[in-house]
Length: 82
Image (tube, rainbow, N blue to C red; front, top):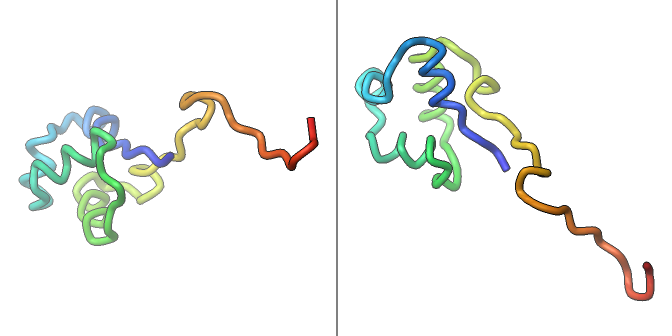
């Protein structure tokens, strides 16, 4: 799962969610979906606007979450294997 680190980056920079919406022109609802994990994706222009406003790189905004936090991994085995 990929996480969006907008809240962390805003806090590090002493900025607010409202400031980011105003600075980027991205709607509050879009930013809220991103920060709450409800977005199914992010388009490059949106990611670029966020990066420019926060003076960061895309890798600073996106993070690959630790899968272990989401629950047990399922193993894939063929029939008859134990």
